[in-house]
Length: 221
Image 1: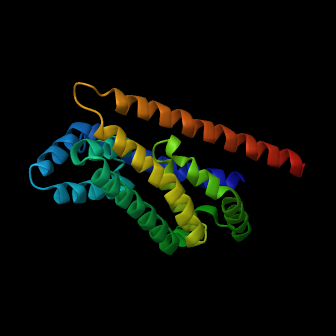
Image 2: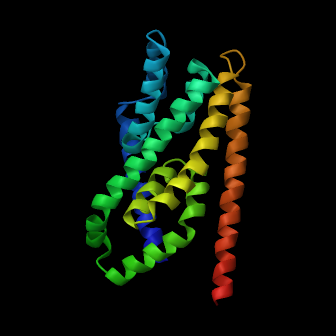
Image 3: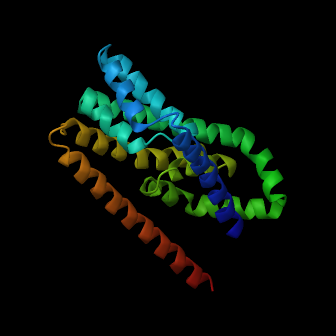
């Protein structure tokens, strides 16, 4: 269990360090994201949708705020196209993170853990609890990307990962795009309420998951 937690925290730390570097250097800011989307809006809806997808995919590397991008997609594109673009982008993040980690992760993992027994134990634990972990991962920034990479590294079955990822991402994309579509610069309340509500629901899921794990440990003892 300790090995699994250490590896997961290492992945989160990697994503967080990239985010800190981007933040400190000012390479990408929220205002930049808004500016890009506003510029794309003057070209065509399909171009803007493609930009949304690209921004969400780039989030796998440079940690662009997913919540803001998904809400802005609804604001600029409307609910239907905005939600579709967000779902496509989030799906690609999962597929790319899972695939790249499955291809190259095991080699890197051996260099970090250096013990096949611990790696096998970690994989079994993630296969047991990873589905729920993915479902509640959007409660914390950078955790969804880390969960996707963990799924690939531990070789979670693709169908199982895809189901958990879609169950997590599709409602998220629908709710955020809708909140953005009914919000305006003068009345941002729907977006704010949605963001707060989603965090409460997701954190409730995290709490339930933690208690479920603790109950499992007690039963084992």
